[in-house]
Structure formats: C-alpha cells, structure tokens
Length: 190
Image 1 (tube, rainbow, N blue to C red):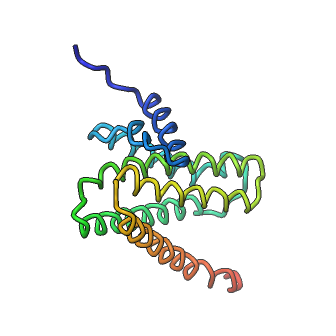
Image 2: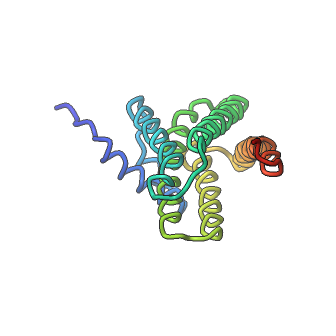
C-alpha cells in the first residue's frame, strides 16, 4: 500500500516539533524533518513565506515603513541566504560532507520561517530589543544543533561551519550599514 504524502500543514507542524527539538538539543530532531526532494521543496516554500512575512508583515500590522523597504528587505534577505548557504556548501565540501547539505538546507529553511513568525509576534506585542537578542541567541543554539544533530559534524567542524556563517552575516551587515548609513546623514534632496 502506498504511503500518503503529508500536506504542507502537516510538514509545518512536524518541522515546528523539529525546531523545538533543535532548540533543546534533542537527538530525535532529524526525525521531524523530511530530507527527501519533496521535503526540500516544502522547505523552500517555508523560506519564501519567511521572506514575505519579514518584508510585508510590519506593513500588514499597520506599522509605517519607508517606500521600498519591503523590496530592499527581500533583496538583502536573498543576498544573505545565498551567501550563507554558499558558505555552508563550501565548508561541507571541504569536509567531504556534501551529504549533509540538503538536510542542512531543509532544517535551515524551516527555522527561518519560525524565526520570522516569532519576530513578527514580538513586533505585534511591542516587545523590545532584549527579546530580539533572546531570539538571536536561540537562533545560534539552533544553528549549532543543526550542524551537530542534522548534519552530524564533529565539534571542530561545527566551529568552522558556524564561524563561516557568522563571517558572512557580518559582511552582509557591514554592507547594509555602508549603504544605509550615508543616507542617514545626508540632507534630503529637494
């Protein structure tokens, strides 16, 4: 008898359990994610939803946004994603562990969706910067556990993997600051 294919909603709830398992360091975390080609496609849908929530969510909540902020956010998010996944691929290639790339992508894509939903919820209730910092620390714990439990890297490999991703994030943030900062100090053009 053929197995039924899970719906996107079922995959969402399973991945949510996987995200909690990653946050708590539960070794059963990989069992909640679908690492098949279908699961990879579902995770990309989740990532696209995460981008849409991050870019358009504040406006849907009634918060004012500058013109073009959503498209700029989407562009920066896509750039950061491409560079981070590229760095992950290069590091895994160096370790001869490209077998872990698809599982990494699946977990990483789902985690992006849950982080976007949580940050949007925090924005909705008016939580401060401390809560954003807590989410950032939780994201780092999850990143480490993705490398440890999903990709099954050795401890030194985990360190290199995480550092490569953090360096990419720092470079992209530096570029964003370099692009945005001059405009903050220049008078508007008449």
